[in-house]
Length: 62
Image (cartoon, rainbow, N blue to C red):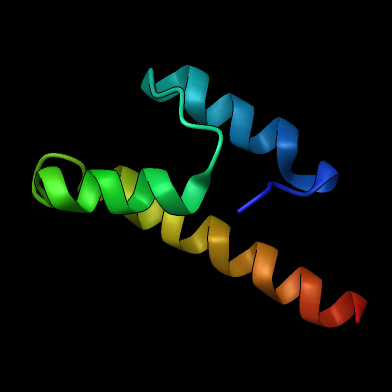
């Protein structure tokens, strides 16, 4: 998944704050979920919401 321009700054901020470096939010979500939901629960919740907002923005733009 490519992060749309309107969401890039927010995603970059998230990456800087968490120390992750994956440019693909869906891939990062799957990576974190496979490691341990307990350890990364906050990050998983944020990424799930973020991806949902991107998908809604795409639907609204269509």
